[in-house]
Image (cartoon, rainbow, N blue to C red; front, side, top):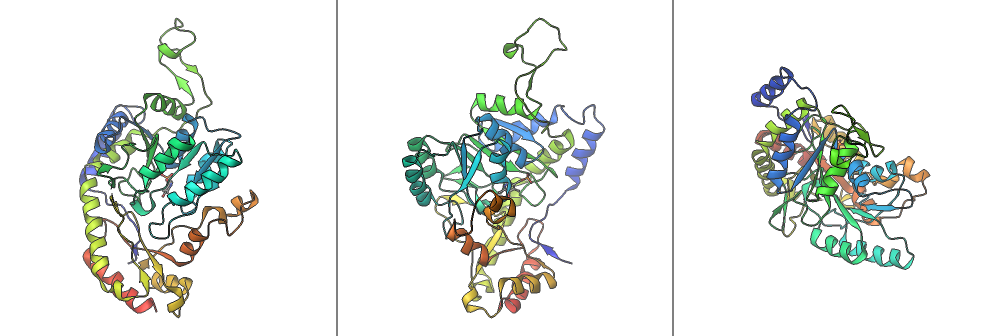
Length: 387
Ligand SMILES: *Cc1c(COP(=O)(O)O)cnc(C)c1O
C-alpha cells in the first residue's frame, strides 16, 4: 500500500450530506451552495464567498471581475500550479513571474519591489499581483499590500493550499490585505468537494461581478436590467460569462467537510511536528521552516535535498521512495519551464531561486488521512533511501 503525499478523508456524515442532497429537489442552483458560501465566509471572516467548480475557475472569474484584459499584466510566483498563470492568459492578458524566497518558497517581497521599480520606469506595471501561499504558509501579505498601494496593483491571493491557515492573527481568506482570495477544494487540498473552489472578497461589487461571470454573464436583478417590464421569466446577459457553477452535491460535501476543517488542520500540524522531531533531522535535507506571524495549514510537507552531499540524484531518490510505497511528489516545476510558456518567450534562468529550489524539492506524505505509523514508515524508509 502506497502512502500518498495527500489524500482526502470522507466520513459517514459526509456521505449522508451528499445522499440527502441527491434526494432533494435541487442538484444544482439550490439552497446548499449559498449555505456553503456563507459558512466559508464566516469561517475565514470574509464578507462574501463565490463558489465555483474549481479554484482554476475562481482565479479566472477573479481576474475577469478586476477587468484584467488584453494589454494588462498579471504577476505571480513561478513556484505554483500552472493555473495561477493560466488565468491571466484566459483573459487575453500577459503574465510574468517574480522569483521566490529561498526560505519560505513564497513570492519574495524584496524581489517584487525591485521588479516593480524597474517596471514603473518602463511603464509596464502589473494590474494584478497574485501571491501563492505555498504549502499553506501565507506570503508576507502586509508588505505585498503596501507595495500594492504604492504601485497601484490589485491583489488576488491564490490560497488553494491555505484554507485553515492564518497570518498576522487573522484567517487566510479574510482579504485584509487583498481584493480577492481563492481556495481550492480538490481532494488533495485541506477540505474537498471533489472538484471545487471559492473566491472570497469583502467587496460587494467584486462579489456581484464574480457571480455574474460564474453564470454566463447573466443577471436576473431588475435593478441592473435595461428592460425591467418584460416579465418574471426575463434575464439579461451583460458580460461574456461562463458556466462555472458548483453543484449542490459538491456544496453539501464541502459544508460537511468544513465542519472538520479545524481537526484536519490540527492533525496535519501534529504530523508536521512529528516529522520535525524525527530522524529526518539527521538526513542531508532541509525541513520546512517556521515563518513569523504565519501558521500553515500544512497542505504539503516539502523538503530540500542537499544534493551536493548525497550520492544519489533527486530522481533516483524519488524512484526509490516510490518503489517502496512512499508516494512522494514534486511541487512545483517552475511554470515557465512548461513548453507552452517557453513558446510564449520565457527562458530558463528567469527566476534562479525557484529553479534551484525545484531541482532539490521533494514533497513527502502529509495528510489528515495519515496515521503516526504511516509517518514512522516514511521516516524509516527515507533514512535508508536518502543517501
Ligand atoms: C490546486 C491548485 C490550483 C487549482 O485548483 P483546482 O481546484 O484543481 O482548479 C491552483 N493553484 C494552486 C496553487 C493549486 O495548488
